[in-house]
Length: 255
Ligand SMILES: Nc1ncnc2c1ncn2[C@@H]1O[C@H](COP(=O)(O)OP(=O)(O)O)[C@@H](O)[C@H]1O
Ligand SMILES: [Mg+2]
Image (cartoon, rainbow, N blue to C red; front, side):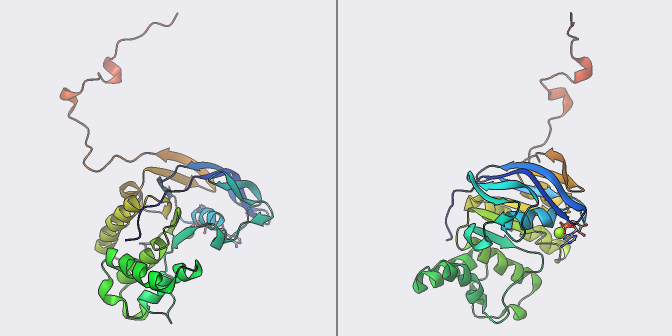
C-alpha cells in the first residue's frame, strides 16, 4: 500500500502570470489546507492549467509568490524545480513512458528518489494492485485502454506518497461511464492517501463529487468558492425544519 501521508499546506499570494501584455493569472490568493482536496473549476482558457503549472514548478510567476508548508517555492524570476517539490501529477493525456512496462512506469518516481530496487518493485506492485491493475504489470502502455492507462498514471502519482497531488482534467479523454467510475476511485485514493490535492476540471459534477471545496476561476481570477454537500446529505423537508425560513423569521428592530 502506498500508505498515508501528511498533506502539504499550499498558499498563493497575489500569484500572477502574464505573457507579454496578456494577463493569464491576475493576482490570485489561495490557501489549501493539509489533506484538503480543492477543485479548480472554470471554462476553457480561464487559467486552470496555468495555475497548476505554476504550482508544479513548470512555469515561473511574473507576480506574487507560492509557499509550500511555509517555505517559498516560487516568486518572480525564480521557481524551485518540480522534482524538489514532492509532487505527484496526473494529466489529461496519461503521459506514460511508452518504452517502459506498466510496472516500470510506476516504479519510476521511486527510482528518482533513490529508493532501494527491491522496495521500488514491492511498492509499485502494491500501488498497481490498489488501482486494480496487478495483472497488467508486464504490459506496455500502448496495450492498455485509456481508462487503464489513466489508472497507471494514478498509481504512478501516488506511489512515492507525495504531500501534494495535481490533476489536470484527468478524465476528459474518457467516456462517461468510465469517467464516473474513475472519479469515485480517485476520490477514494485521495481520501486514503491524506495528500493535499488540486484537481482541475471544467465539469461541475466531477468537482462536486471529488472536492472539499470548489474554486471557480474566470479570466485568471477567483470568481467564487463553494463547498459541495457530502454524498447522501439531503436537505430535510421544510415541515421538519427547525429553523424558520428567513421570510417567517421575526424582524429585529434596529435602533
Ligand atoms: N505560453 C503561452 N503563451 C501565451 N499565452 C498562453 C500561454 N499558455 C497559455 N496561454 C493563454 O493563457 C490562457 C489560459 O490558458 P490555460 O491556463 O491553459 O487555460 P485552461 O487550462 O483554463 O483552459 C489562454 O488564453 C491561453 O491561450
Ligand atoms: Mg487546461
